[in-house]
Amino acid sequence: MNIKPIPIRTAVLAGLLCAAVATAGIVSAVPANAADAFVPVTTVTGVTIKTTVKSTQVVDIAGGSTKSGAKVQEYKSNNTAAQHFSIKCDAAGWCQIVNDKSKMCLDVYGGKAKSKARIVQHPCTAASSQQWLLRANAGGTTTFLSKLNTGYAMDVYKARTKNKTPIQLYKSNGTKAQKFVLAGGTVVNPTPTPTPTPKAAASIIDTQCRQWHVDGPFYFVIDVIDNDLAGWTLIVDDNGNTISRTNVGSLGYSFVSATPDCAGMSARLA
Image (tube, rainbow, N blue to C red; front, side, top):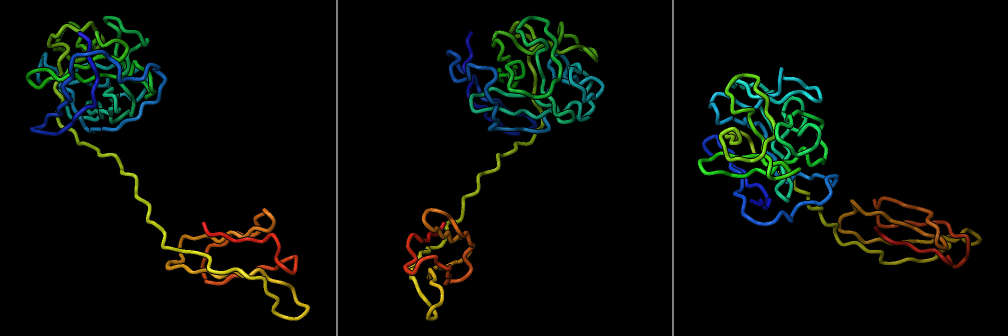
């Protein structure tokens, strides 16, 4: 069955993180190049990934390691950071699973989709080996399908229930070994882009060429009107060359001109 990724919908209800239900179709809304940038639009932190082979067992980073290549395993729940993850999903629905302690991503070792490939942690990149599609199953469980090939899923080795059992990649088969429960977690809303405050109306109301004293220099004189002086810059050019950039702080400015008629001098606000 082909899976079409759609953006993840997350919520924390009765301790469960609910993934968006996948629909049948062709995978088309994903970047063709694995090196394309991964840009998360939804992030949930502090998630515990429980196995369904035994309710007390969860996904765990072996020894709480922060080293690249550390084994991902199942282990009895102990509420340590080694068992807490952030799930970061892009607009196409592909998700990275990041350990909250090491800040590294769950990764298919070797970068190839094959049964029994180990799952380890590595520094996060845009590689397909670190991207997963969360498929919602009946009963509130979730299956993690690999972007390397959505016919392969995250799997508990031989469905064992013992501590230190490896987490691996295996051909998708719908068994308990490939079904997980996402518990807890906090949705992190993206920081909105602030809307810039519009500047108050401003304009240059007059420019003149003045000589204040006989035989004195000529001045290029600028009068500015501004309801709010903050945020405006007065730029003065002489024959195409900028000779001044001044933050507007008053309503009048003057600049010495090299010619009696201030030829080629101009002013503008920005």
